Length: 398
Image (cartoon, rainbow, N blue to C red; front, side):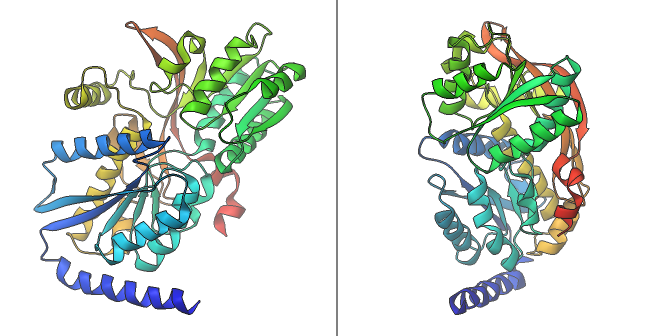
C-alpha cells in the first residue's frame, strides 16, 4: 500500500509540473497501447493504420499544436505489462492522453493509472460493458458485446427463430454475450436450447458443435474473438453440416473481412450484427475507404479497429480544443460528453452519462461482392444506446 501511495505522489507531482508548462507547448503527446506482436497483432496494425490516416489528413495538427504518437506493444493479454506501460507513458513520457487497449483485462489494468493521474483513456476495443465504470476518465469508441448482440437477437426473433443455442469463448466478453443473447431472446419469447463455453485457443470444435446439434435448435448465436477461433468455428460449422440440420448461424465479429479468406465460401450467407462494414454506401464511408486504399494499397479494407482508431483521434482532438492544449483531464472528459460527429460508420455520439459511444448497428450478410467475400449491410438499427447500462441501471449506478 505504501508503494502505491508513493507512486501516486510521484505521478501527480510529475503531472502537475507538466501542467504548469503545457499551455505554451507546441507538442502534445498521445500514448497508443496496442497488440503490435503475436497472434493478435492485427489489432495493433489496424490501430496504427487508423491513427496514421487521421494524422496524415490533419497534418498531425490540432490548431497550432502538433500531435506526437508514442506507440507501445501490450504483448498479448498481459495486464501487468499494460499497466506498467501506461504508467511510464503518463509519468515518464508525460503523455496527455492514452488511446488503445485491445482486450478487457489490459484495459482494466489501466484504470488506476487513468484515474489517479486524471489522464483520459480512449478505449479502442474491449467488449465488456462494465469497463467504463472502472474509471471516470475512460471513454469507449469501439463497441460492447451487448451493443451488437441485442440487435442481432432482435433481428433473428423477427425472422421467426424460436429456439437457439449459444456458443461463446470462455472469457469476459463471452459472458457478456451469453447474458445479452439469453436475456434478449427470452424477452422476445425464445427458448435457449443450450449454452456452450469454449476455452480460448481451441482449434477443434467438433465436440462443441455436436452438443449444439444434439440440442436441435433453430439457430446458433456465436461469440468468438477475431482471428483463428472465429475462422475455425465458422468453417467447422459448415463442414459438420449444421446448416443442413436446419440450424442458422448468427454472429457478430466472426466474419471480419480479415478472416474471410481463411473461412472461404463456408461463410456465405452468415448473418452478423456489427457497427461497421467497409461496404457501407454512405458518402463518409466511401471517402474513408478510398483514402484508406490510397494509403495502404488497393486490396486493403478498413475494419472496426482502424475506424475506432480514427474516431478516437477525433475524440482526442475535441479534448485538445476544449483544453487549449493544457493537461486538464476533467475538462477534457467534460468536453466529449455528448460530443457528436459523422463517422465512416455513420452518425455517432458519446453518451454523457456512460461515456459509451452511441452508434448504428448493421445487420450484415456475407456475400460475394465484386469477386471478394464481404459483409453486405442489409438492415440498420439506428443510434443504439449501450444496452447493458440501460437494462442494469442499479449496477451501473454503483
